[in-house]
Amino acid sequence: MNMPSSLPIVRLKPKANARAIRHGFPWVYDNELVTDRRTKGLAPGALAVLEDENRHAMGVVATNPNSRIFCRMLDRDPEAVIDQAWFAEKFARALAMRSRLYATPFYRLIHAEADGLPGVVVDRFGDTAVVQPNAAWSEVLLAPMIAALVEVTGVANVIKNASGRARSLEGLEDDSAVLVGAAPDAPVHVVMNGATYMADLTGGQKTGLFYDQRPNHGFAASLCKDAKVLDVFSHVGGFSLAGLAGGASQALAVDGSAPALALAEAGAAAAGFGDKFATRKGDAFEVLTALGEEGAKFDVVICDPPAFAPSKPALEKGLRAYERVARLAAPLVSDGGYLGLCSCSHAADVARFRGASLRGIGRAGRQAQLIHTGFAGPDHPLMPQLAESGYLKSLFFRL
Image (cartoon, one colour):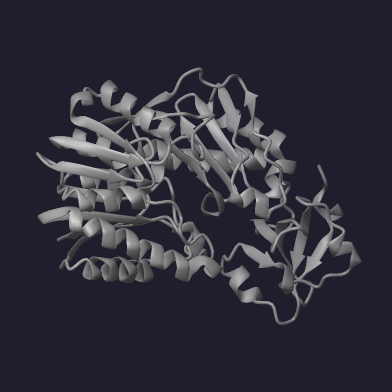
């Protein structure tokens, strides 16, 4: 491990916003640095000391010349040594909060920048942790990071999930692997809000389950007693299984993935709801259109699509897609029923997403009361200086 004195220096340009970084913003973009031959020659993931224009040290950063985000702040102490003990302190701090919040060890343990590990996601499933090292530095320092994870949490198995858009932006390969122990030979049962979910930790989306929607599943369940529920973009049955746990009379899950729907069916059966649960495979927009043509009506309709606006250039197109979801879903809601609309696009803030949703509801000829706005659970903390860490929005309307 490099001693701090031997770390290379990267320096901010005079017009770079040093104040934002001092106030907690964790990133330095490539156009904010003095880029000489040495800076450009840094290996992806190399550590450096960041200095302001006056050569005052600001902290230890991870660098990646291949990324628009050239530097990610790791430690405000320019003398910090990024080793296993450093990682262990981060994991212990994160674990202390989750242990207070959750009775069982099923949660997001590390939420990237907000938990002090930029670009790193760790989801815990009992004695198995799934790690997404989405930044070059975490790939370089994977060995001490995983050793610290096992040391602090005592997990027996660690799976590396190396897929997704974030890694490609960092120039990283897709090389998923089992790093410690073994991968589960069957889906893991995860109980949330009284429902049982089946998490496929190796073949499923992301890390296998979306813990971020837990509080929104719970709110939706409170609307579902004796209700007929439609869950669109359902994945493994997030809202539909929560609705059944909340007393729904029947639930229909719609998704384009047959494996995800099979996991949803298994979850419904495991919780004793199999006879009230049905699935429909297909493109969500096509199924919503077909249900409208069939004259179908539901007491609760919830749509939880993928990120239609994953970046600012995609924002306008994404907002039109969210509007279309609302326009197609609103006619399916019975009078006095409830419509839940979700967005996991950080580029679409809650005001823009709400506007798009209301335009769609209005174009469908419906009137709405907004009764609840939900966000990600507390195991997905928000870094106030970084809007991207607060990506999830859930709007619940009465129509």
